[in-house]
Image 1 (cartoon, one colour):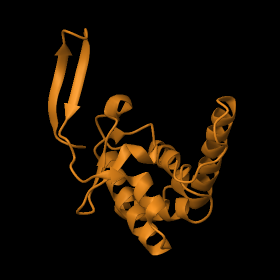
Image 2: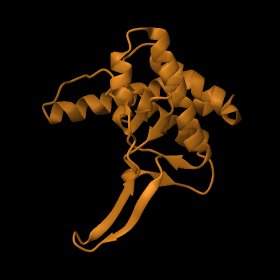
Image 3: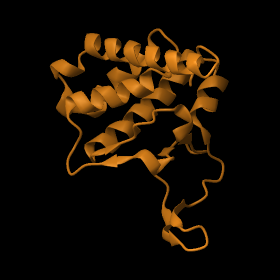
Length: 168
């Protein structure tokens, strides 16, 4: 997450405000993935994302909105999570089940095919404590990605939005 520069009450607006440092030169991971033409480049970006999410999960942080615009790619290749308003912070690392569901939320925004499974595989490399976790096996993960993709499709259909978007 970017450094916090303000968190507190904003009297003029009568609400709580939260501001972070401006991230010069950063762009959304969605844009970076869409712009990359090579599968190997996409996999490298997803590896960085998986490592970022694994680090968050180890710290007990969950981003329930896995939209790829909530992750920014920096000019040096680092990734920052933004849109912290829905973030949940626990006292310990996310369990295998919670981590799988949260990662599948991100994986469901990727094109169907191998990329969601690549995200899972690189995440598991970064979270060695979950290797062998039955709830986080490839089959369960793929089912959860499919379930969440279906939920997104239904929501988009209800809003009369595009039925499927790559790198949502």
